[in-house]
Length: 181
Image (cartoon, rainbow, N blue to C red):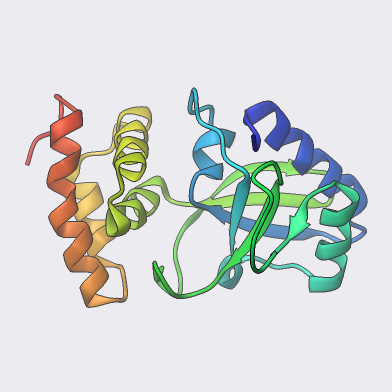
């Protein structure tokens, strides 16, 4: 079934108490919304953007195992499993450098996320129904304006992804009555 906010924070607590050195993970995808209190949202995966994270691979893998979390699994995954997926450039390419927001410090673990406008831009690249709902939630939660999102889209390094996100921003307007083009 995955994790909700309570279980996610417990995972962060366990990881932070297990890690022996200061570690930073930059989470993307659904986990930032869940950690920020997005209601009725659960997932089994925690996407960690490798380029903005600072961790020792062995120590982080062992901490995940001790927390009962799979580390960067490949192949088939049991739907009941909770896992950390290490994300590198691919389906979504984030800028090389970007501002992060601290979600919390949990012992030796600092959890950060990209600025919410960049999270929305990344979700608009794929544009699935759930991604659009997440984008609307972030826009309402953080009072993001359309121009904030357009600016973030402009910072995506891949022109094809910028185009897809730019086209998908209109989908936000279909869900959010406060949206303005």
